[in-house]
Every structure is written in C-alpha cells, then in structure tokens.
Image (cartoon, rainbow, N blue to C red; front, side):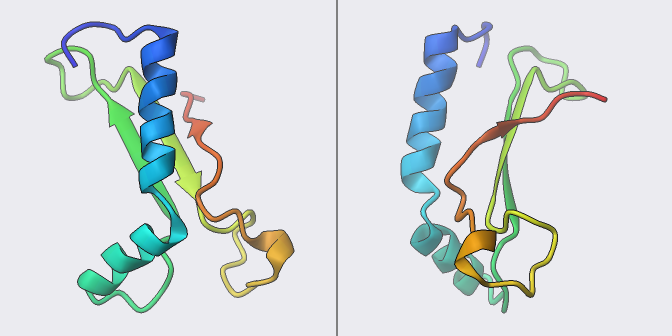
Length: 89
C-alpha cells in the first residue's frame, strides 16, 4: 500500500484474509510444500511506505490456542479464526 489505510480498509483486508485462511486452505498450502504438520501461525504484514525495515500494521492468526502443538483437543484449536494485531513490546 502507498497510503495509510483507514480502519475500514484494514477491517476489509482482515475479512478477506479470514475468508482465505480456512483450515482447509492452510492445510493445502502445507501439503503442497510437503510439510507434515499444521501451520502453527500465519502472518500478515501491511507496509505503507517504501521502508521495508518498518511494518506499519502486523497481524497473525494461529491454529493452536496454546503453544502445545501436541494437544489437538477442541479446546486448544483456534483454527486461524481470530486475527491478532502484533504490537512492539
């Protein structure tokens, strides 16, 4: 992007990503590159200027709710259903 997106534009982008990042689609990507496991996290970076060292908007969605990738119980599966904003700490 060349300009700072509005809140509505960011929400629209995240809605489009939400539609694309289904468990089936992400698993198909993993299969196509012959990974044997679920993709734990997916990341979306939106850069609004020419400086590639800074990312103005960064988000992620995760498959597991916790860091325990061996726990495949329903209570630990998020399935990329929520996008979280990454903030600098």
